[in-house]
Length: 287
Figure 1 (tube, rainbow, N blue to C red):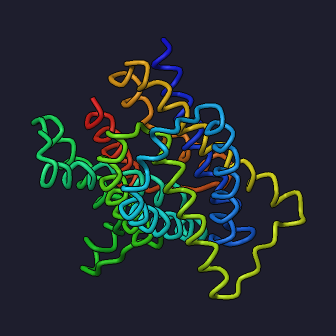
Figure 2 (tube, rainbow, N blue to C red; figure 1 turned 135 degrees about the vertical axis):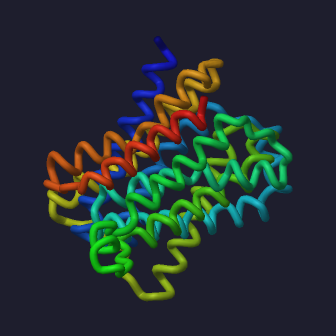
């Protein structure tokens, strides 16, 4: 039961977080949304860092800093692209594509870490890729007029998928040595610094919005994102990974339901089939 509750906590955190990221990005832009999400997340995670301080692991962190810098770069790239997609396109399209980052991480892990991919997982990857194809193109136009039309937001979702997939592949050896939390807060803090410097470079004011209608979703993005990470890692650290991972993998369902209910998004039948294929494949991959 605990594993299921932890997985549901991740679904709510990541799924609702993506929805509020879309709401916030459409109010203040994707860069400021990501900046304040990172700031909120780092501040909240710092309290946990103080409670779980481990000097030995902290000293060992130094040798991993170059790798964590690379991780931070890819994660920042992914978030900027993802939030840009949420800002300008259908949330129910961008979210499931970005959520397929595990495919990239799995393939890279097989190639470079010599991890074993079970037959069921290989089939799941093929199903996910088919789902992305169904979700990405206007198949009705393609079949009737032979013209390929790629929906808005697909490229951003793909960049996010690749960025998260590569970044979370690179962090694997660090997490195996130091556990999940210290590498996570480290690359998020480094990513925050990178984003801060980038905003300074392009002379973008880093002003917290004054309107309450913009403040509430912005704060919720950071808090819900941290909730998703903590709930997931709490569940898997308690030896419930086999239960937590499949449940948590369904987090795009929460995002899509919220988008349909509150943003009045409408999906074509083949897009629904694509989303179903993606989510089914993600769940099977995590088994």
